[in-house]
Image 1 (spheres, protein in one colour):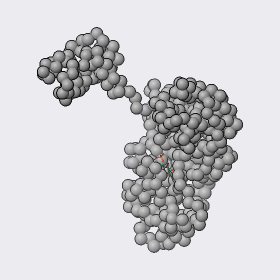
Image 2 (image 1 turned 90 degrees about the horizontal axis):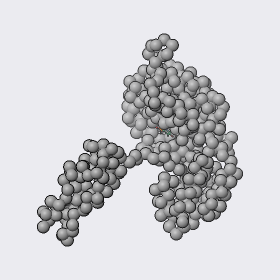
Image 3 (image 1 turned 45 degrees about the vertical axis):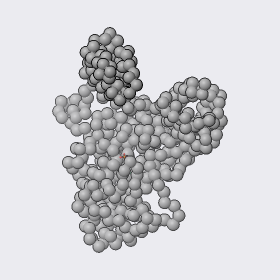
Image 4 (image 1 turned 120 degrees about the vertical axis):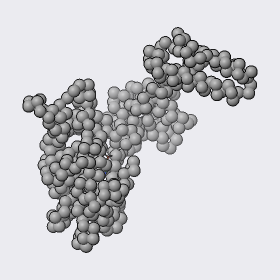
Length: 454
Ligand SMILES: *Cc1c(COP(=O)(O)O)cnc(C)c1O
């Protein structure tokens, strides 16, 4: 009996020639459509063999429907744009910094045509890709030289490898942090081939701890490294030498000083009611030989690792073979240049989404939240937005939240995610922070909620 039922399943070719499959063939192509049909037939056969009730085989329509579902799943993109209503401005899981309109357009222009990535139009000769963002970086920061690589983790790796391979790198114990996504300062040091010379204690490290480590010369120290604590803060009985003190120490012993700022910022964060995040300009002014920071944290640009500093040191980095393996691509350079231009033109706060969100007044968030409450119900609550991205740990911005009390907040949050909206859940409420939602997306948020609550 089972064999008869199996034989009742159509052949692959019969299904491919079915008129209902023509649309699938034109949408997905023959090889993928054939694979889909083979797949659903194999599954149907397995089902029938397991089946003890002698059920009839699935109809041709049913098989075609399953093949359609399989094709949709296989070809669906996994990287979707979404609405971030969490109030975390630099959310690493949600892609960190959204780009300005100008940066998006610059990427598109370079993506759709050939370009001058390594070509000089005036002479017709080969030029350098390093030209594009680096001059702007020097102009914006006042650095002698700059280099752009794939991300800041790669930038730190390059600095350590090029300047301190097989030699010692002195760093305070309090800075041996894990940043998230598996970036641990001691592990990166190990990968670079440099030797870790940790000094001081978790909470207190003094200049004489560095002095002693350099003086013993056991590890032939080649570099002094300072790393930002990133997403954690040591409070209470703490001390660490500041950058100018480390630079003075470096000069005394002929050692370069590298400063990994993590996020770094070109704008002073205290003007926006936040705590002070170390600025790139400060590090240069203090005399750091190289300063590293991310392109997609507070800079508000594409994923990139930016290294700026003294000409001689940066040239050494550029010539290192590892630099080629971690170089930035044309799309990144286009978006980064556009982003840097916003700083140069003194329009960063108006144009760069990250800064627009940081500088958005609580009144503006409240007005939008009130409109949302009017449309979908819920309550207006006082709350806090965070910057995230390893910058400004424990710092928050006052905000207004829309809170929805529903029977199952988990269920509502899940259904919102199906509509690509990510919200927060707290105290049995689903919370929306409009600070991180572009104002143009308010209406989509409202209409989706109306639909889900109906
Ligand atoms: C974020 C961060 C990094 C890594 O930067 P990516 O651009 O994510 O690779 C390195 N160091 C510090 C201190 C950071 O905060």
